[in-house]
Image (cartoon, rainbow, N blue to C red; front, side, top):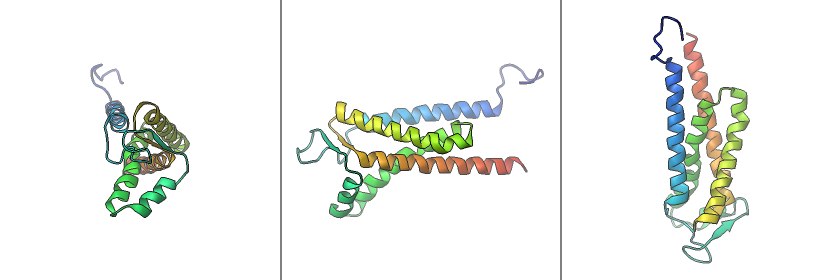
Length: 163
């Protein structure tokens, strides 16, 4: 802030950053609601039936089963793409919030993976939903795609700010 600038006025980048933080917190609240509190289609319909604890620790097993045994194309798209899309805002917003572009490459995927493992663990311990390693894989992929989008937006912003 300069001496001429009134104390009540914030620089634009500070307001933007506060907006990003608010959007990230709102997204996290929605993510935790959807993954831990809402009862979604496809929840826990395993060998033990609806409402029992199920888990899958075999990578790509449920992805393959969904692809092979779904009655229509929409079920696999909804389930698989939904897990990816659900974590894209995480990667995007966190990718914009972390200052160092080099740290964004490894921190955001790491945080997406840790968050997803935490959600899957909480689903197993506290809800009657399916805890699935494939969800961790797909969620982490969504975090990575969101990170790429954030890095692209940062590149565009830098390119247009130089003109």
